[in-house]
Length: 290
Image (cartoon, rainbow, N blue to C red; front, top):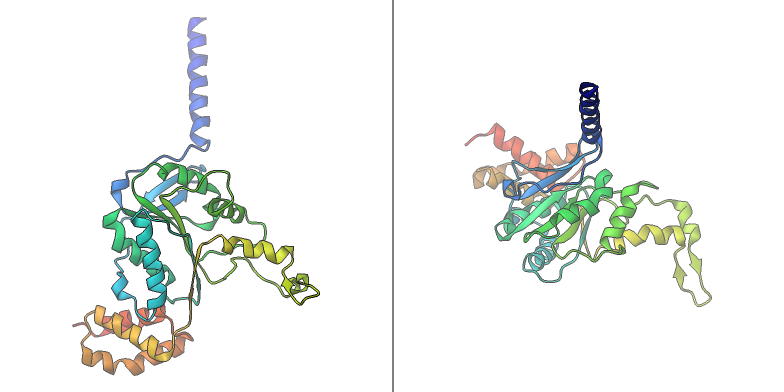
């Protein structure tokens, strides 16, 4: 009889252990010395983990050309944050390939020695932002929660989670966490022609947006700093291509000779972005090793 009870208890313990292994577990702090950059990931079991980025992109602020006004704003805000001064959550919007994400990575490399850290979170995991903030709240480092290429469709849960974290949650803002997000959409949600019909005109000529438009604007307005990026002119594109060619060790004479090829490269891709300039420089430098 005693053996049967002991076997039953052992089987019950095994069953409980198996159930616990598949239940969502609280997010635990990683070894923060492993990397200055982290990715938040969800396992198939539903467990959230912070994974270190083993190879952080080595881009520097000095490598980014033709975006000086945007660079000045982001660098100033980030420096204020690192120094423990008031700073804003940042929304970087505009043309693709113009340096939005690169600027954030360059700031990380610039200020990581002074305690800046970065956690990349995909939009589908933004509902877990409160857990991430709780894990880092007591740390001495300053954390940028980075959301790349952010946009939402109607009804996505991450939209309201981000909105609450930015401004509106009962919990006070954590002074060592800021949100930096990049997007091609200024208001982060799709906009439709029919929404223009919801605007209201008062007798004195003022125009007021309707509830649907107000809701879409409300999220982007919670970012304290908006930084806009614009398509590059031909000369700006060539200057960026020259910068990257120099970075890859191409001589000044070859850089000048490469201008027509750089223009053809951009024409074939239908874009004169910084990303296209970098891709051209990689191709050109790879075909003409020093």
